[in-house]
Length: 151
Length: 201
Image (tube, rainbow over all chains, first blue to last red; front, side, top):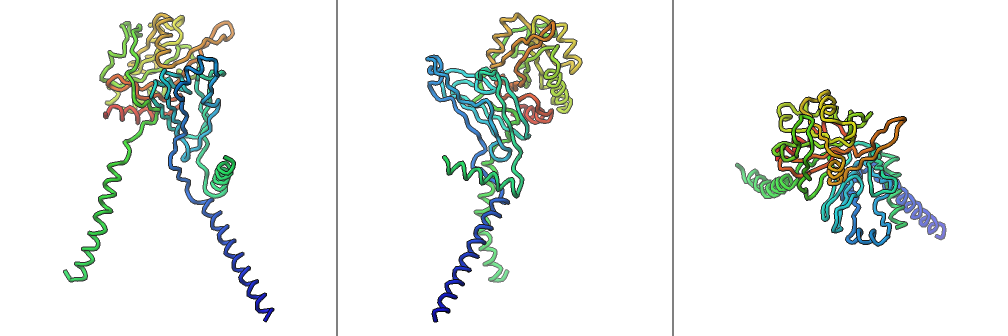
């Protein structure tokens, strides 16, 4: 009688373990093969209102990094917005107040732009290729999850 | 038609009609074809200027109203960037066929000390005889650069100098609005695509 109970428990445990394994493998298979479909491919940077006044007051406001990293098919559109009330050189473009500059990328490469807003006088946009199915997609998703967890 | 066939037809029309309507709505709501270049939204009027043209005339942007203007900045002794850009633009004009007549390339010098009108004409004609160069007083050229957010800086090179400058190309539509900016290095096909879109509007 006791042996039967132990056997039933073992069987239930084995079934649960098998179900968990199938679930994990299924999730990994999905994460490695399902296409990445972001809600938006825009990588947005904004000059907030009052930025010019802050700069004039001696605050070295840095909005755009020296290097921006994009990935084709995921975030391959650089969207720069000037929400301030004066024209500003923002990355590669002179942008009027209330204006935006939307630059799409279709080829993976490193792009250099003259940019007087940066101390070096230049900035780079590195565009990575779209992650291939399998390990690269799985690695990309894992990195995203880790970033979300640490945020 | 049998009763069964009639009911199937009725079911199909009941379910298919909304689907077809939804598909039609989705297609009409699809975004308009996008430019390959970086787009300014909303567009502003392209800053105009009065410079000396390589054709000997006074050069303004207003002169080309009704055409798409591809505006670039550079200098005739540029080693790599300017020849590449101008060759790409010449290739794009050839690919445009008859539409090329509605496109004007304007090349504004960042090196007025060495780029005379004659020098620019000889240089640009080698790429495409319709290309027009623009030069003028250094202050006037600096003001034009500032109005487009273009930078140019002399860099000593041996006993001479080169000029580091913005290499993007500005796309100005037929109404004289600054619509977009194409980064350096893009293919002639991208220019053909964008010029055709701008001409179609």
